[in-house]
Image (cartoon, rainbow, N blue to C red):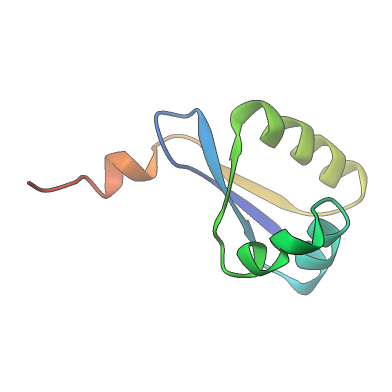
Length: 81
């Protein structure tokens, strides 16, 4: 796997996580230089629509993508008051 996408909030936003050097290098060609640190620290959130475009482009470039879309992170890590 080169890039992993995780649901963040009710399936509308995704956390973008490069999981290989190839995935990171490929993402660097799609994001501004100022965003590379956030990419390397798994701090990039993209919309569902943008994630679909990114996945399509990445797969056509030969990358391996995993998208976890069944459960959002908010469902797994529920806030406790």
